[in-house]
Structure formats: C-alpha cells, structure tokens
Length: 382
Ligand code: 9MR
Image 1 (spheres, rainbow, N blue to C red):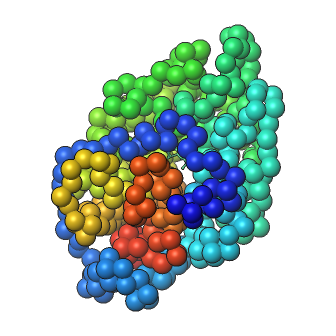
Image 2 (cartoon, rainbow, N blue to C red; image 1 turned 90 degrees about the horizontal axis):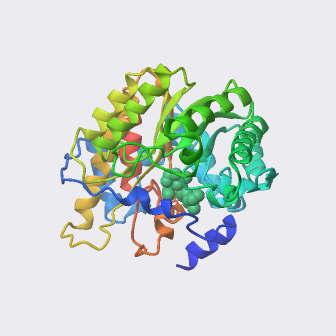
C-alpha cells in the first residue's frame, strides 16, 4: 500500500472523492469467453508476460503504441504524475493525448460558484502544450459533483452558477482542448432511464444536458462536445438508453459532437457484445472516444474459481475485441483510445479499499513493463 499512498500524495489526492468512484464496478454479467486469436509471435509474448516473465517482453510489446495507432492514444493523468520521471517517460513514449483524471472536474476547480482554482488544470494544459499532446477535457457536468457547492442556492442563483461555471471552464481552455466530456454519466445505474440529481432537479433530466451542451458550444465552438458514460458495453440496457438519449438530443438540435464510452470493461461479458455496442454507437456518424479503458481482474468477494490465467485470457480477449472494434471504425470517427491510467498502480481500482494489491487492469505493471493487455491492444492496432 506504500506505493499507492506515495502516488496519491504526489497527485495531491486523498483517494476516492465521490460515491460514484465505485459505480463502474457494478457490472457483473453472464459469463462468456472468446479465445485469443493472436498471431504466433504475440501469443508467445502474451504467455511470457502472463507468467510474470516481463523481462523477456518481446520487441512487439515494446513498440510505442502511438507510433502504430492511426489515431490518438490517451491516458488519464494527474498533475502530480509530472514529477514522476518514470510516469513521464512511459506517457511520452506511448500516448499522444491526456485526460485529466480529476483536476479538471468541479470537485477541484469550484470552491463555490464564482470561486475557481486553476493551478492543477492549468499545469496539465501546460504539460500538454509543452509536449505536443492533445488535451481532452473531463468533465464539465457530472451528477456526482457540485451538490455541495450549489447547496442552498435559490433557482436563479443555481442557474447562474451552472451557466457561469461551464462558460468559465470551457472558455479558459478554448483552443487548448480538442474536446470536452460535457455531461458525464447521465444514464441511470441500471440503464433504465436517466439519473435524478441536483442538476436535473432544477433544470430537468434532458434539460440540464441540453443546456450544458449549448453553453459549452458558446464558450468553445471548436471543441468536440461529448456525452460520456460507462457500462455501455457491459450492460446492453444501459447502452440502448444512452443511444436513445443521443438520438433525442440530436433531434432537438443539441450540439452533441461525440460519444464517449468509458469502457471500464467487465471481462466476463459475452464475446460480440462490445463490438455490437460500438457499431450501434457509430451509426450516428459522430466521433467515438474509448475514454477510460481498464479491465479489472477482481472478483469483488464472490466465490470465484477462475484461475488468474483464465481471467487474463478473458481480459485480453475483451480488450482485443474493443480495440478491434475501434480500429474498424471509419477514420473520421476514431477520436481517441484512452486508458484510465498507465501502470496498474496508477489505477483508481488500486485505490479502492477492497483492492488486494493484485489487480492488473491496465497496460503496464507497477514497473512500467507491458502486461498481457498491452499485447492485446498493440496486436489489434497493428
Ligand atoms: O479515477 C478517478 C479518481 O481518481 C477520482 O477520485 C474520481 C472522482 O473524481 O474519478 C475517477 O475517475 C472516474 C471518471 O472521472 C468518470 N468515470 C469513472 C471513473 C472512475 O471512477
């Protein structure tokens, strides 16, 4: 746990900030597994990596992802990580885009309506400029944030605070962000309908979403404006509700410009489910962002007889399917393929109290060596 605490201190982060941190884990669905279908070279490299013999990682695994991907490869980032040379080296080798993991959210930026904190988000934006990385803004309006800062405001003050926040943040980073997650996680946890929250209570369920997009458009007309959500592949009901919301918003003329699927993948979902969702989402013709990919091996307390190797096989199969579905999109729709952290020890999942220190949900292990999942992604991209 020592390393995790050091990392959080580095990042100025105390761990979980909101109850929604754990929400993307609520996704245990029917079992299914697709066998790995990788080339012989890759298959042997995966086996080596899975056995922990990562020092024998093959040349293919070491190839910088950004050099083989014909679209941006992204990672979540926290400003404190810029002081960690190993993180910086890994990031600059493999990725071409950053998403602030939490410091461009209301929880960081907004003390109370009208009072903003810009130090960390500015640092992330400056890092992107200095290293010629694309910056993806995350997230303007989220059901899980802002309740405290907006508590007690009357309706006019609430609406002014909502409008001013979006205008202030989106205009500050105008010309620097390529896109914004304008509304994050609007769909209800079980996928039936939309969430009720402090924003919807005042502005209506579709109302707060539409208003946020309009305001973001005025503040930064060139940014691609995303609706972003999770469990869209894991839970087909939720995926369908998300797509119906997109359809409704577009019909109403709301400037939704892209669709973000977080892809905190449930490694037990049936083969084909991820591809089906990506294809349906792509039918709108909008850019698609795989915005927060990780794939936990954890069983979360239930009786689970799967071996670690079985889980790794499930994980690499599901991640390969996602990457292949993304690669198959028309070039103009491939906004970016973003992982939610680089090393396993960077993952929010490893900061969870239930973590046993063994989960391996990301591309690299604690030392920055490629995990089997790296092989799956790199094979799909090549
Ligand atoms: O990984 C993020 C964690 O460090 C933050 O404490 C938390 C609250 O800001 O948000 C986590 O990222 C979430 C993302 O913003 C939206 N989708 C779910 C992610 C994991 O909870």
